[in-house]
Image (cartoon, rainbow, N blue to C red):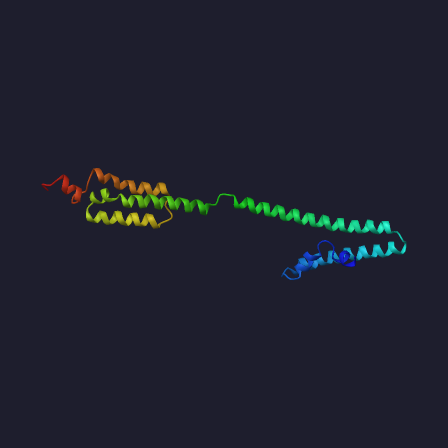
Length: 177
């Protein structure tokens, strides 16, 4: 009975705090627990001497009730904190959004590099190298969005219909030159 009175419902929690580095919290909780137990023991002793056992049970019930309310409060606070942390997990994250955008941009650039033969055949050798470098830079540079990358790529599409002089398509369209 004394063990239950001295340690109450949160005795295991208090004993567990001694194992951690949070000694200030542990000492405060221990002081509250010991103070409550001392007051409860004093009331018990006084009531036993007067042979008022019904009041002893009332004091015990009050002691258990007080520490029970404390535990329920702690559990509710922990629940609210856990709920807030869980709601943070469901919030949109910019990193994941940027990862998705980067993946889409890279997919666009890979698709463009596979179909870039038309553009490359319409460019002279110097501009072919510029086009390849720009595709590579757009692929590895994460600062461009998918729309910006697409705009930079589409400006080269002009040369599909208007091949540069000296390009493979120019030579096919103008065999006399």
